[in-house]
Length: 393
Ligand SMILES: [Fe+2]
Ligand SMILES: [Fe+2]
Image (cartoon, rainbow, N blue to C red; front, top):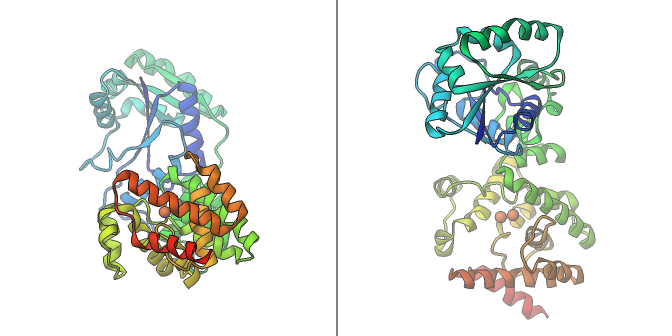
């Protein structure tokens, strides 16, 4: 097994970092790539709007989530006191004693690698993968340092060819403060920065244009859920056009419908407390139901969504009797969006083509059947929704 270790401040992680991680994975044939944000000591005076360690960790998760085999590690953030690369390499080696380790770094680091803490141990336990941009200065570094490091430390060093650098994190921070920089960051990272008002950004979250809202909405999600939410938006807008309802409201509700889905039970309960929500008996036994309630409250509080959008998020898991057209659209879009692959989804899609109500009825029916199969109680709102639809026929 081959494991790469890619450390850095990642302040913020940008598309250059993501490209470097992808190239390292490909060139070195890595099975796993650990992304390790450095510890920035709390006593260090940072400029206003600087992210704390937890925020840098979250940005790294959002940035590298789509890189195959990448996994963000809080190994260095958890370590007290001064942090050395050799300690990280040692910790990874202890966890994977049979793995071949590759420590990744910029070519400029080769100049001083022999001065790092315990260089012998470092280069014994890990090979060095160095990003090479083929500049004249870099060629000089390789010519001078490679023979020295190989001779003195028996180092194994491999170059990872890269295109010229697009921008450094310091330039991106400056651009962000001026309202730019979006094209140098992945959308969820840019969205996270806006939502947390990092680096001097001043987004008004209650009046975001749709494109910005999409990026901010993605920043609330696990990377594995992003395709689902974008798919729900795509399906919701298609249904909204067909039913003649407001497209922007459909997009907004779809983008935010799962905004608290990744929260733990404790976080869900904290949100309930914050927004004065009570969880009913079924919601208490089924964690996944709570995110509709907390998500709707968060969307209203943070983004100032309309009552119509609030309702669509609020009822997207259980449904209810007499749903509005927007509530129906979001409920159905959530069930049948293009990335859904479960058995029977085509039947639900065909029914929705016949009519939105027909699709809704089958989607609700499927929820009831799934709950019964799992031996879980069916929410009374779901039964009321079905009863109401049948009564209308
Ligand atoms: Fe959901
Ligand atoms: Fe969903």
